[in-house]
Image 1: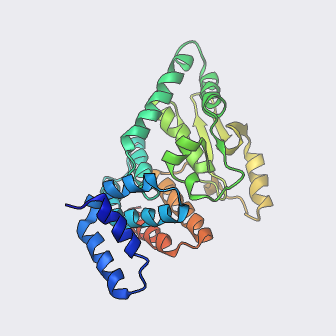
Image 2: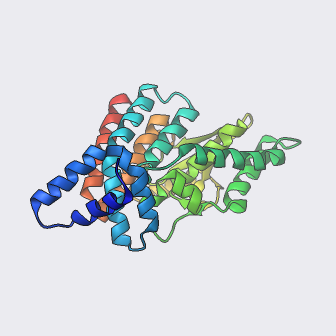
Amino acid sequence: MTSKTEIKSLLFLMDDPDPFVQESVENRLQELGENAVPLLDEYRAEINNENARQKVNEVIHKLTFETLEQDFIEILEGGLKTRKSLEKAVFTLARFGNPTLRISEYQSKLDHFADIVEPQIKYKLDEKRKMKRLLKFIFEDLNFHGDAEDYHAPQNCFLDQVIERRKGLPISLSLIVMFISRRLEMPFFGINMPIHFMLNYVGDKEELLIDPYDNGAIVTYDQCYFFLKKNNIDPRPEHFQMATNFDIVLRCIRNLIHSYERKEEMHRIEDLGRLLSVAEMYQ
């Protein structure tokens, strides 16, 4: 049985210059395994120093990554056939940033959002007005928006942190819309456009493109073509096809790899590369 005192001692000894001491600490932490995570998490909450907190984060990551990887593989083996399985996969990826994440808490938050807006769209609205009402609820009432200050921050990729911070990348904002709309049985889908992920609303009477990074504004294909041309990309029909669940998962992982490349955190990139390789195998 370990204690918080032992955890503190092990973390302190991690900085010891003696390789034997470092190896002994590493072996002890591996021996404790995930049983040490609750105490590490408790200790992390008490730390004010950012560098010390980051050290604890890395220890927790090392102790939990293998379980995360196995859980991720189990989801992929199911085929990602439903929007519900996609949601589970995306929240499992969020454990990469927060290994102690309780996924059910954030699924309950999405349930709550859907429950709030459902009475507003349930009666006497045509499909386009329902669509607009949901987008207004998410981007104005809940204030989800793009992170223009630190676009490439990993936090913008992790769905739990997107929910907490109310900001993220185009794809993570799209997933918020898609997961809330799943609970309301509304036909929102993703468009895997290069550089800028888009939303697609496929109603009975019309199909619309939506920019999640511009507060859910409706845009035209001509505007998207111009955007791609401006960014030296020759627009092709496949750029506007509906994204599969695997397309979305792969893009989420690649976005995270890009974020950690900018931070030069090579060990994180290596672990994400393992997840990417596994996902590509199941695609």
